[in-house]
Length: 206
Image 1: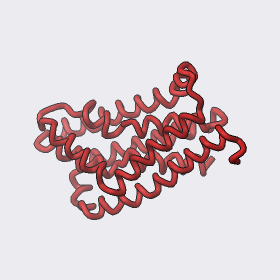
Image 2 (image 1 turned 45 degrees about the vertical axis):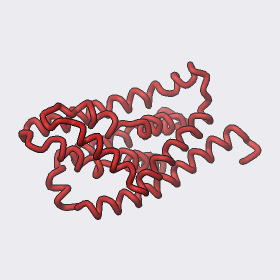
Image 3 (image 1 turned 180 degrees about the vertical axis):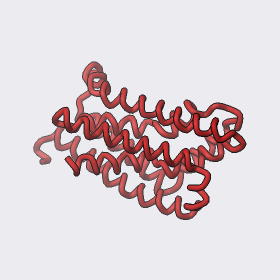
Image 4 (image 1 turned 180 degrees about the horizontal axis):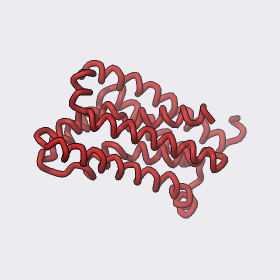
């Protein structure tokens, strides 16, 4: 169970990337009051958490209704995560996030867009929530995955609330280094998802 929690926690930490969200949030809320900045941080994380919970709990019935096997979804999800990992390693993900940030006015309420969706909760995190729950064998395992998501959301909220001091402490170069290392880890996790899906689809490969 500890291994399941740790693996799920690392996956969501890498995909959601709380330190990577901090500079975007800081730039989007520049000039806003402390109270308004705090409200937007809390609201954006709560919305993102609700979206992930919805897909984690109802994603499997949706797949069954569409006639999509879990093995096929694991392969597709693994490919998506691998593409995100490549973007992280080559810094393309950060560039896209910055371009989204530049397209939003400073006076806007950025809780829903672009912070909650798609910066915190995007296709990768949604797919990961569905993937991890689909791998859960018992309700306790499902609860462990949901707990891992919740912990990552709390970490994300903390980084958003402390985005200003955090960015001064970390700096852009250290953030870029961490992003690349996490990208390599995510690539390995994505490969494992694909391998699991292939083994389930073609038992002879096991």
